[in-house]
Length: 496
Image (cartoon, rainbow, N blue to C red; front, side):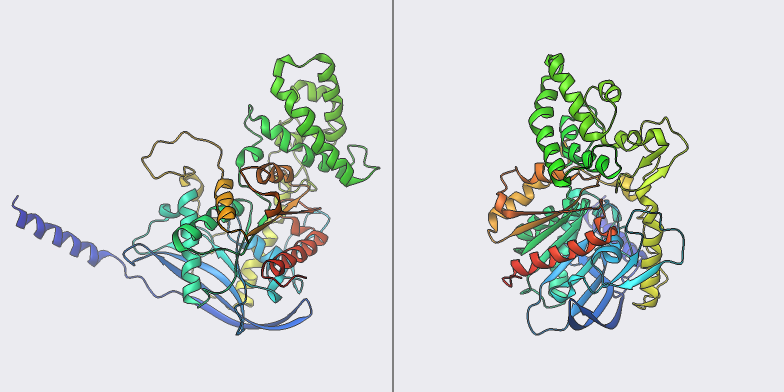
């Protein structure tokens, strides 16, 4: 075929594609005005619940990121905190309706089942709107966020792809709202902490944006310490010991007549100073030393010596959730081990379901009711909570581009955080952990953030008597909000 014919054919194909390609409509936004008193400060604020378009290098829209923006009118450069949950594949529903939003869903604080609708919602005057604007973000494939135009949803479903899209959203949001001189904070939960560390580096590298502070809720940066289902992962047999100790204490399966904090510290010391070197020794461990370890593991976990011998000193945290109260026919929760569930199969190795997920219907009902009745969102589009059903199966954990060779390893964005901390000496990180979290154990947060070249002065640890979503427990929610407020004020030079 002649070159002219080839060019004509290509032109015709482009015209056909352009004719069939659907035009991208303008972003949808729902604006409402509100008033409230937060920590004694009376505020008038605007909620913009709507789409922000991110674009490719040619300027074409590729995704519509939906967010809930709580903005207080001010002539000063108020801080703005970008908040997301994890998953991957979770909307911001949990932190929005349970943790930091100005309205909250009420579920039993003592880990009892919340029952069925109608549920109760209340104002949350303790939240942090008095010190920062808040933007609750739903990544592509969650909430109302979706790929548009020349974008495909798979373009945003991956460790690296997700971080880049969230950083692009933040940069576009700052431009659209004229907020480039506002202090910027990132706040994520679970995989949202994985994301936050990576986003902080993309913001610095690609957009030249320094963040003022990062809040990790239920830290998950280096997944080795939170992966208990891989048999030869010695680290997980160490990082979960203090959480199992806290759980056994809570359920009365160990001697809990003393001081809780002392008991937990003793479990930390035992795990790192005695159990870790013993597991490293393997079959070279002496019988005398092994017997002592069995006794100590029983003391801290409440499990029988026979069981500890059978598992060769290696207690799988998920199996622990089934074993702790097996004699009563109940399993404890994984997301929050205060919860219990009476399961049918009492001889299974691990729980059939997570007892702590009992709160999910209440949270779903709250966001759906709140959007329609408080924010005026009357939209003929499904709010994806849970996420797009294809997201999990198509998620790319490889940090390298498609086609590049990669030897799989545990996900780890702690080096990204370490790099940003070295580049930005003013940056600090607050880490909030629940004692009863069998998904992201608090000792793993310490193990992860105390290495990777991260200075100890850069990390502020806070602990709560709750689980993965510690804000379900009312005293923990109050403490989390107080700690977050103090952290933000300190980072912007306002102290307490």
